[in-house]
Image 1 (tube, one colour):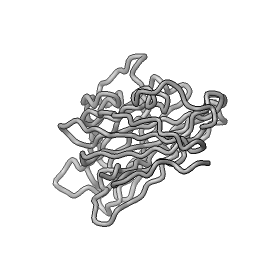
Image 2 (image 1 turned 60 degrees about the vertical axis):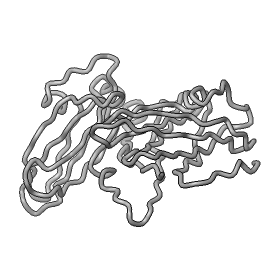
Image 3 (image 1 turned 90 degrees about the vertical axis):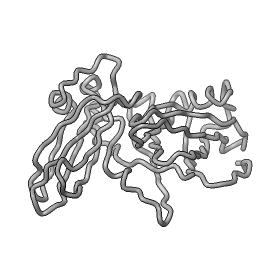
Image 4 (image 1 turned 90 degrees about the horizontal axis):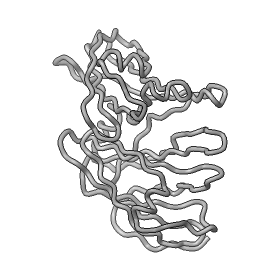
Length: 252
């Protein structure tokens, strides 16, 4: 392994991105938690074996969206064509001058069809990370339900009944799809699959609609005291349950 170029400034690092067409491939989701502005992230790609600098990709995320991009697409975005055969893992350095920009790192296996959330977050003192805990991104629509069904779980942490609202947005574009409300009993947990959410907001995804973003908020004057999470069942791998909740913030 060779030493890579020195990176200066604040950044979020992904040290274990991978590209192996016969095995695991890394995908990044870049959620934008702003309500009315597009955010931009720069992603510098360095090979872990050769130390080669493959360039810097620039990815824009519309408000409330979370576009998904593979590491090969990042390379193309950065102006490259192919990775060195010696490099199978990469370090990604992410930066953004826009607040409320996040990242989720996912492995997908082309051989087993298995995928998993590989996000490892770091935190800075004095920053507010609440937006990362009140929403889940890239929830699978019912289009993917036969192989990779998603479930959104909500828990009311309050000792009183709370009126909660789930706002739903299209993953790639951030377009508002609708909202649903429900009364959550004190300290109670609720699970919603994609079909239930779609029926509640009167949304029918097309064959090309794969991802939704779901935000939880208080539907009353009371402060929000709720936890939201996202799991995916991998039907092809013995119904394995995968935690797709964790989202990291991009330091700027």
